[in-house]
View 1: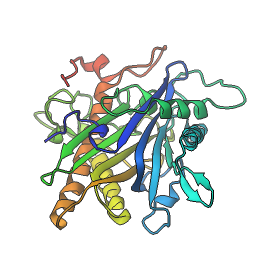
View 2: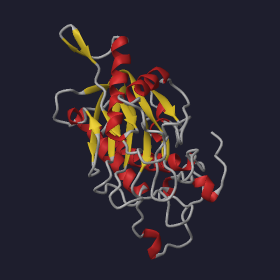
View 3: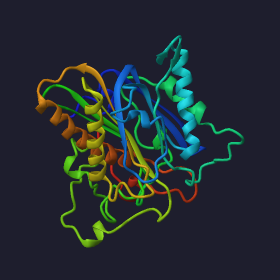
View 4: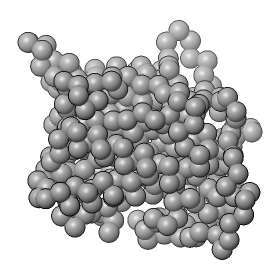
Length: 337
């Protein structure tokens, strides 16, 4: 079953904040943990961009993070983590190194430089300030989806991309949820139609309730990409309130990539930068191996659902030649939340 808000913030112990610049055609989304969270991550795209991602490996020394950052701006967007670090440091957060504190803020970026937004920002990019603003905006409870934060300038092969989220509750009572900025080289929709590859996993009509098409043709699974050498990326966070080891958190990131591959065709291409972070806030102990197996299973499902929700909730950028959103092509109302 879905958790109450069907969002990443259904996981106890974290907040989400956005900073959106519609003129820039880009933005930043931040996941801030109340206390350092056990964390890991995995990069499977061939053209990733990130900051402090190596420390997330299961054999690396640092075991917990203060925040994750998802940003547009390609390599320029990596400045956003500095803005988040500034906010965390001002609030007394960070890994203790003697008397100094160093906030641990891994980041992944997506390529949105060619979406028609005004990228003529002068000497320094705006992403450090956007990162700080997203950190200060972080809150618990409901947050916006679609063309906001890191999903502002996102695109896919067929329709506008965006930021999506979904959650589920395991039999153990643990919550697992995913947040994905969908900027895929491939497509989240099937062929030329409105149906989503993630349709078998949909809950409560969260992305239109259309199900799968009555039949599939060879054209439906043919290669559809938005460019043969155009960098893209889907980036996200899967989180749980369960108590996990770093190795177990890494396995959640692996499973989240399974969900991405079920929702985007094709995923993990040479010019994608597909990156999934994972975190456990440790609020709930798990008993027995079966409980963790279910969390892994749900991590894949909520990630697939989050991808489809991000595309379903997106709106086109307000500029000539902008990629149309799913609703521009197929109509449909948003489901009640």
